[in-house]
Length: 168
Image 1 (cartoon, rainbow, N blue to C red):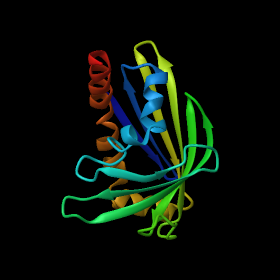
Image 2 (image 1 turned 120 degrees about the horizontal axis):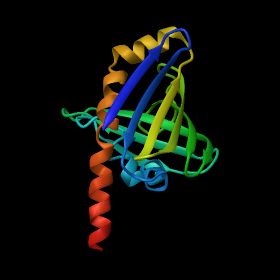
Image 3 (image 1 turned 90 degrees about the horizontal axis):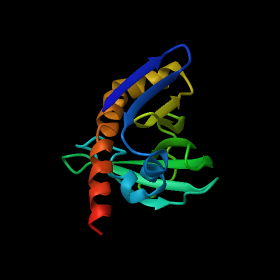
């Protein structure tokens, strides 16, 4: 699987792109099913758990990522728009333990797009930041590498789920 990331400090954005061998409809399940989403949304050492997932426009999600030492970082999403099976637009931010926005580091807007390719699907995650300071702080926290590691888990999920589906 080929994964690339590009940060643009002028456009205040980070783009992560990956291609994998699955249909766009199958790949869509990676964001529409919280159990599949939590298998890749965090890096391997900081897996995500979604405790709320209202997958509809204006719906909310609450998740946390748990580190190897047990520390939990909570986050929230607001689903702005959903165009199955090709695109979802979310607002994303840090949350308190109850999933309410904490205001820490502001809000990021992310657009996840699934495009068919000759060999499968291309996932593009375009993250837009509110300020250069926010972008720099997120990079310092490891977001760029974290996204590469997180997205790097997708092909394994798709192959496992595909083989599990064939067995049933």
